[in-house]
Image 1 (cartoon, rainbow, N blue to C red):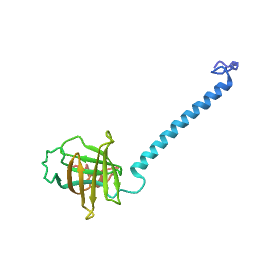
Image 2: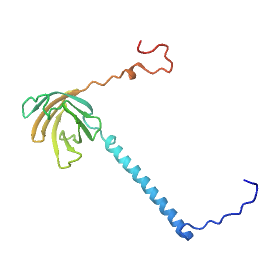
Image 3: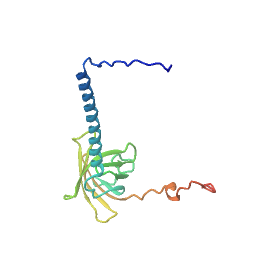
Image 4: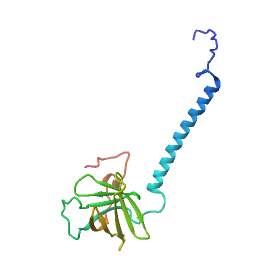
Length: 180
């Protein structure tokens, strides 16, 4: 800064010996590489579970057209009543009932036997098995038992939501406001 010569500073090994410093550097590099490998592997496995492999026979959101619990029509306020089922991910199903919270289950599809098995995330010993039938492209029939009750349900696809912003297009410059 003042235009004078500066003497070189001798760097001493951090751990006292050069070979210990180099061993520490190698160990640090291995730990970082293993952490990075674990993150990449976990992300790949999660992506493969959700989107990879064969597609399930049913996907998308379905609303309940008719439902019978123990061969009786349930009331709208019954806790076991379903409003809709969401099969957006191939290994998960969201069950919407008359009141929150939404229940999320793991789904295992068996295309040969035409069954689906539900399990809870918090309780792996709990399970419910349903047989499914696709009599028409826009109809799904489920029959099975859940929590000790027999359930029969007919479902149809929910209409796709139409958002105004997605339909009217985007314009950088608008001559007039959209709301007039």
